[in-house]
Image (cartoon, one colour):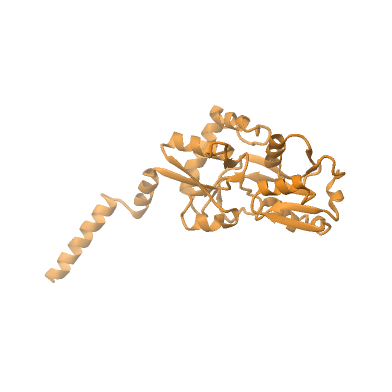
Length: 267
């Protein structure tokens, strides 16, 4: 009997130390979130202007600047974690990253993640050389088209625009868009299906010789994707993002990257 009483006493003391006076496991969970010191963002390092490596070898971009401002305001340290885009879900589910924040399309993935509010209205477009004689998607029949693996453009070409894709002579998939643009420049492909923000950035950085077809492949919105069910962290990040939209910081960062016409916050 004495052994049972002693065991009960030890157990009670342990519970008291863990939860405190009147505490619960939910209190412990909330304290863990409050004590958070780092915020690890998973991103594609080959996706300018949203995330990329600059000439100094530093990771930068619109989304990373937004994430840095969120961390500065919340007192967190930002950890920039480049990931292979086709392994992003594994990185998120394993806890290696806290979110996917890098031109991440919400459309078609609504139930797969816990999402922030949308912050960019984006379109998927085709980029071609100006002298290619291609004026519309219909002119891509018999042509070689490039696209990034596991991208929204690929999803569109395999989904609603599958009939159009069936007219291509080939649909080449790339690990990143920089390689796709190099192949477009070299003539290895005739067109590249890509996000309009990326298209504008690449065309501006490469000079004349390229154009965006007027007819869009698809339209979509970007959001920050958290592990399904992680409402606490989503709410913390989202509230700070909305605060930035209200005080003008969000638009300041958007203008830095030429995205003021694409964003749907801060207007």
